[in-house]
Image (cartoon, rainbow, N blue to C red; front, side):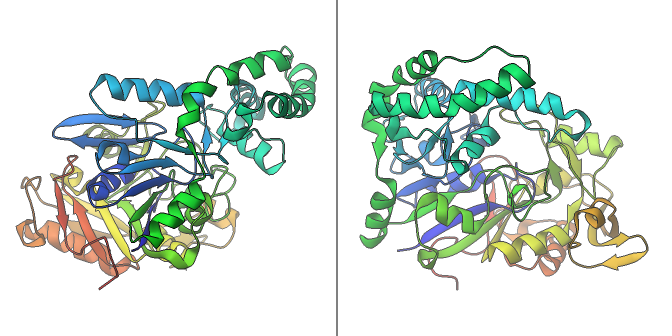
Length: 431
């Protein structure tokens, strides 16, 4: 049976949680392969809203086993707070499992994140301040602390000592902060050990055995393509690879086992944090999209920047992720807009670019070239097929599909899991 990857095709917040939840009842495992509690999902089930910050959306599907993969960075305090909040609402979190190789966010990572952002001033990236970037820096720098380490106090202490030797120099001499003691960090991690112990697994072995047994594994990517540290709008990116290739690494599943690569893309565009955004709106229409679409960060509450659909970005995302399908979300948010612009190319200093410019400088100077589509006023929230959509809404969808580099297999017409037009089945071989 297949491994399936779900990836954001813009700058995040596209509705990956809804897509995962929609498929959740038909898959056996849902794996989060990257990111931490900086990559939240909003899921609406039966009119009830769940804001998931670290835990995979599969937690809401009772027959699915959710796993935080080896590519994640985990704040244990945030994890257990989220589990308790879900339990208080009747959700069952006992199935959640955590890779022994996932890295842990320490309190000093959060401190480093916040003070370094302030230190950057106008060059700040716009991080969530959750310590995600510094944790990935320690991982790559071989100074990281993994889930398995907190079950051996001797190893844990050695690793904390190694990490703090450098961190304290920076905190005290550069950022004018107090030094962090080894004891306080060791004690901080040890308090979570017993609760975490039954959750820890060899996730790579479990997931590959599951595929061998004919089970379906869904990889739910955090963030999105244009926040990828290699393929995104660098340096205004995250510190991991939230693309399809990164999902393979972050879950420990070989690329030859992935049969479907599904891109989640809004019918317009948003992003959070600093960085270029060619179709960004600064007027009342931008505020309308933000208000009607509920465009505020799940984790931070920050208002998202809003803009029109960008087909150039869609083609790029389809290419680097090898998308087999696009799942378009929030089409209903555009209802009532008289004319809807779509970016089909860029103007960079008088030169037309039909693809994303190669250099950071050119992309920063890119101006959108728009085509315009007539809008619709009819309520589309109950549509079940393309034929149920008003003519102009259907024309808009088909036009986007033609210019986005990948077929559209599902269209979201409302926040609930049932408010989805399914054109092609998203599980199994591509037909």
